[in-house]
Image (cartoon, rainbow, N blue to C red; front, side):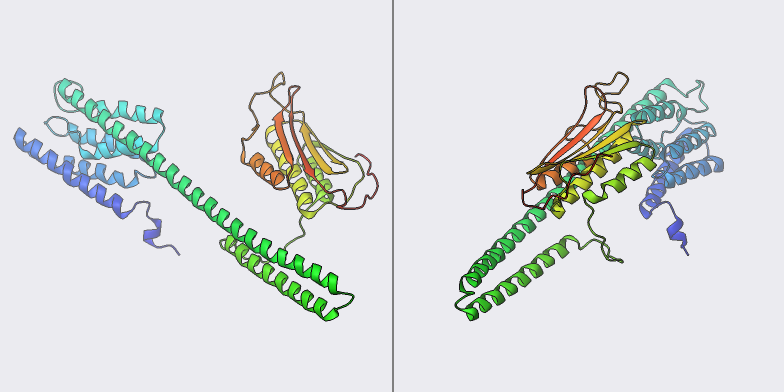
Length: 393
């Protein structure tokens, strides 16, 4: 059950700002009426307080707050036979709009504020020309200050994000160096022990046994240390509630092609060359590239068809996803309708995955229309035995 404090849309700072605006504006109206020899009417004081209280909603609803403040301030000015008063309350409301809203909204708010808060009981519709000029100047100063503060906030946030990204990158490099040191040390030890065990296997079984025991202990220690470092990387993740599923690979491409068809995109799938087992990391990369490329095609290609082609070469595997949707060279397509080159987080992720495997990725719109994603991943010739050629589908 939520408390009253949880339901409030304003903070203690907002309350202090509203209270300060009430004090300043009431003081200004009191001095103005005293100099004019007229009393400060209760109605005007109530309108001033109501306008300041509207500032409590300025963070969530800046435009509505400015409209309410301007209306109440104009009403307060019209109730007193003194010069129109541009107080602190409309200045704060206009400043909030300048910080939070688009330039067009800010301009409209400024153009409405300057004349409306100049309404009064003077002979002219807007009090006096001097008052209108003064309020216009004050409006320009408030808007300019708000825009400067808005730019400063954006630069501060950009610097904060940049520093956070830099800290993450430095931590990743540190962990990568530690993983490299651990793997290099232990695997070197394991290689030496394995070579010693092989050399002594025939004539000194005891030495071979000791070498194998050392080999086993070094491998166990390497796994433990790497697990600790990886646990640091996963410290913010939620704990797994179910056993992890096997990593997908080329055998799962038919499933995501079928899902693409069910989503409304006609998709063909072709396999060429002798199908053979791939290393798990290469197979996962192939799957992710096809998955991301089909997702992008469904998002950006519109009513189009896609074609997935997986080709097994003797020393590499190639995967291509092509669609015939709008492209840079299509007659009615929109140039740049889809991210090309390095743009887009999906393409960046694909490039990183492919580069990690020592491969290359091409992603660009085609001159004849459509978009093409092609990845080539090196695979050792002895990675797996051929299982025959699978027909195109």
